[in-house]
Image 1 (cartoon, rainbow, N blue to C red):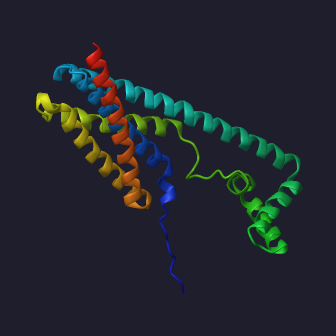
Image 2 (cartoon, rainbow, N blue to C red):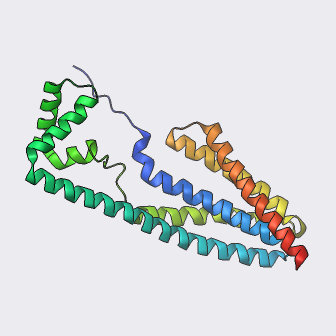
Image 3 (tube, rainbow, N blue to C red):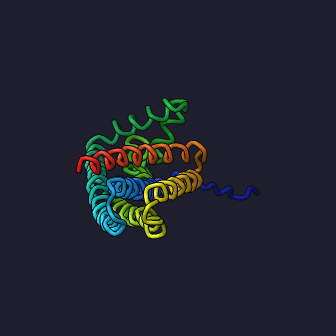
Length: 231
């Protein structure tokens, strides 16, 4: 008697993982870049903190709204496709069975077996079979707007809090290097954690987020210096 072999695949995490990594990364990069840019313009530490807090609140709200609108649009498209597929199944079940059969034939099954698989799956749940194999919609990838919005807002806030903490702990005359170094460390850690959670390569993910974070902070620091000198 064979034991059931249960596998855990990382695709099950794709919905919340994408929003979490994106939110935390944006929180660190945007807030750290804002702080570095403002601090480079020779502003006082209190003013830098105020700017950072304002960036955290505005960014969290923007992330939540943006994710909700974006993922809602995806959900609307999925629902429209499912409604169209439901109507086609009702109007032409034979043609839909042929369509599903052809999909399985292209994947490598012989036509008689592909026909049998299509027929049995459609007998159990025709819409689910077509949603998964024709439209690419499954329980793991389906759009969840509210989950994405809350996840993005919370993780953005958590990420943005890190550079703010660095400002509080840094000497008044060393805000820029202190925040930059701390933020790059946070980004490296985030990249490693995100890669591990998603089962991807750690080095590549860590380098990617650290590089772009460093570039963003370098650009805003340069702009801050130019504005500080001009003003």
